[in-house]
Length: 225
Image (tube, rainbow, N blue to C red; front, side, top):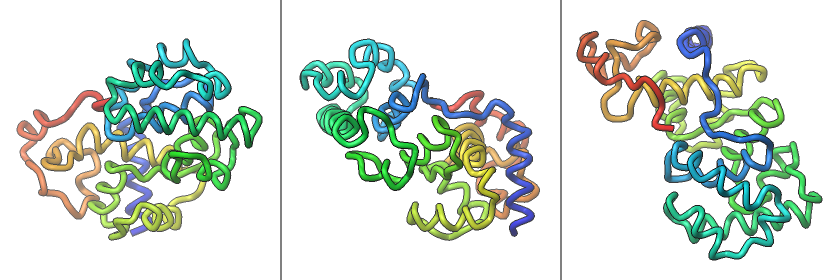
C-alpha cells in the first residue's frame, strides 16, 4: 500500500507540475488571513476581496484596529461575514499582543490563535515558511479514503495516518497534488475515472464514468479556486 500510495503521488506530481496553493498571498500574515476567510467559500472569491482587504489593513496592527463595519463590508461577499470579521479582529489582536505582530512559524503556536486549526496552520507552515505540513481539507480527505490509504474521517487522525506513509519532505506537495486532483478530476459525486492518470492504482476505479469521452466532459481545467 505504501509503494502504491507513493506511486500515485509521483504520477499526480507529473500530472500537475504547477500544483500550488490557489489562494493569493504575499506574506505569512496574508496567507493566514485568506485561509481563515476561505472556509465555506471558494478561493476565487477570497482572491477577489484580498487586494481591497490588505490595501486597507496590511498588517496585524492595522487589522486589529479596523472598524468592524468596514471589515464586514469588505468580507461580506464571502458569506458568514460577521463571524469571519470577528475571527480577523481577534486573530490580528492576538498576533499583536502575543507575537509582536508576527506570524509564528510553529504549529503549536498557530493553533492557539483564534479561528486557526491544524488545517490552516499546516497551510501557513507549508506555503509561507517552507515547513512541511499535511492539509486535510474535504478534497484531501475524500481522496485518501478512495485510495484506501486510511479509513479515518477525523481530520487529525487522517493527518497522522498519512504522515506515517509519506516522507516529511513530501507532505506539502502531497497536499497540493491531492487537492488539485480532487478539484479537477476526482469529484465528490461523479469522479472522472476514465480520464484519471492514477486510475490503474485506484481501488475505487469505477465510482464514476470509465468511458474516456464521458469522463473527459467532467474534467475541470482549473479548480473552483
